[in-house]
Image (cartoon, rainbow, N blue to C red; front, top):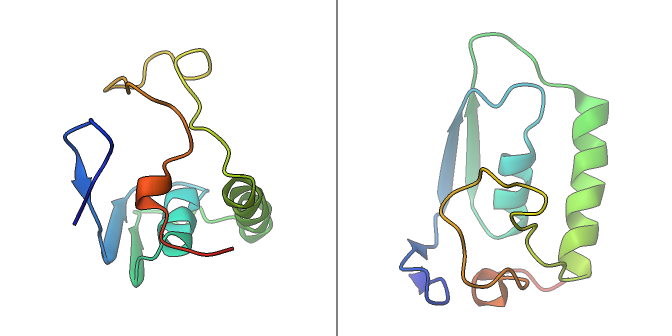
Length: 97
């Protein structure tokens, strides 16, 4: 189990389930890139957009390769909880790119 730097959040999920992913499975793609073994997406209607998800995959790989910082309140002002540090989360990075 990994504890995120000073955030009191623990994580090292191997199986991820997402309810209502809509047209983007970005959460699932990132989960798999970071080491999850399985991703399950459950939605009432088939919204998935393959070409959009391929673009999202490429952007996520780029973010990981560059160890980009997490977007903060300037981009997502309503996201909670607020983090003490928005640097790239190296302490949970499970993949060697």
